[in-house]
Length: 247
Image (tube, rainbow, N blue to C red):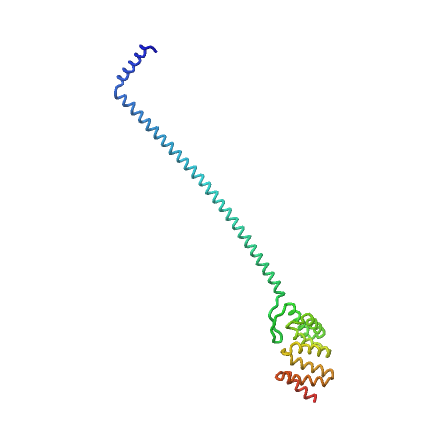
């Protein structure tokens, strides 16, 4: 552009500025301020929107995490309930097994019993064997009673029932008229338990067997021993009466 042309353009700009005047210049300034204020406000709104969106995303993420935690808690509760149920089942099974074991052990453990006034411990098997033999005797089946009591004495020689078993065995044999075997088992009772509650009666029974065998000398001796050894017993009174008859 030539110097003359630039001069003309500058002059035209000056004339235009003069024509617009100070009022128009002020209006242009106010429009710029408004536009800047609008732009600033828009920027603040956009920043606030970003903050809100970020907050919403954070809340949504926290909500998702909360749902995940709640789902995990529900799963753990379910597992806990299942484990608790399994534990209860195991405890019930263990308790039932222990009861079964205890029940089986009770079948073999000795228990406190009493026979002819004497208390002692006895195993269930020997209790059953003794009770069965005594029941057979009370039925009047003296043959089988002899067999059962004989088996008992052989199987349980150290039992607390043995003395009583010998007494009933001797009585069963007496009823079967097997007097010699009866005397043998009665004598075994006295040798084993001279202080047994049935000892005086046993000695009197020996005398009865000897009388059946016509052994009067031995019978007299046995009757005298009853009165001497067990003077306060009912057997001693019976022995005195029988001895008087022998004289």
